[in-house]
Image 1 (cartoon, one colour):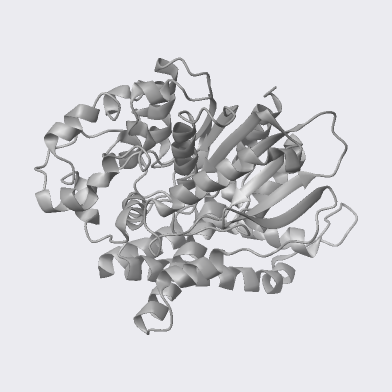
Image 2 (cartoon, rainbow, N blue to C red):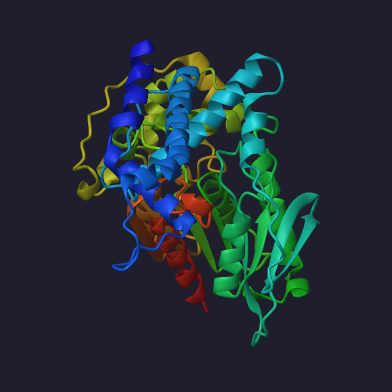
Length: 455
């Protein structure tokens, strides 16, 4: 354990140190509004040193926080890939998140509050000032809290309506957390956006989140005349766990003739299955933030039944019987992943015997409302036009690729946007102060462009 902590600390302290210092210098320079001209005074190291002291001390504190987080959370060695967008900045984001998790663990051990409660508090975001271009109101749809964003500008005809389900592993996230993302989508696409605050795990287990999202969506579809929305242009969307919920809701609505047909679904790095945590993307990105392989399994179990005690068995694959694994192999298999996504290395999975007790506890992983990738072809065939966004450095990359293939095989039009230098959660950091990433903005703009193209 001590060796792991030393290794974690060394990586933050030494790996690409020059990048981190340059990034810190740039931040400090921007904040101080320093201008260097040929006629101005020369900036010497002595004049820079006092200004640099605070950010460098902050960098050291973040490094210590990350090391402490790795120790208390018993995390494996993490990795910041060379090809990721702005690796130095991502390392700082990781340090903040690990430091937050470490403090939460300490608070939990001292009985002050749970780690999850503290994590939610730190991620809650803040209410922003009024947006001059949007009407924003908090409502309830079938007792589910929602936030509705409506553009103020005049519009010829009825607008598109977008239901958005936030990410956060079914455990974290809120209306405030995704406020900036939803405002941006509403403004830029000139659409009505409904952000849904579904119940969170582990207090509310599956299918609570799914039911909240479905009920809110059905209520909106039945009352769209109040929001000036075209019933032929309703879209469900979400990122990460929210992408899972969007896919599940879309599949359910396909069998509802009493409701308008969905125009599209937008799935942003969605998690769509819990049968195989050893797909190529899980192997290649197991230690890449913001979602580690172990945490992906942890979140799935928290959502399923609020009990993550079987996380190791789920990771090694001993939670699914051989006959069930064989049944779904046609849909959940490395063989269905394009070869270009295997060049960073893939190890063949060594079969393990199923543990009956574990399977009994997690057998609902085979339900499509929980794992939409397992839906039958008859259901997938009825899905609306789809947009799927994936990131290269994301454990959930292959979930999106596998669902893309299933949709295309069933004749569903798919627009796919792959962020070559992206990582999991990059969209949620949009306009997040100094923690935003250009690659995330590109991804968000691709979503807006897709929406604007739906007629």
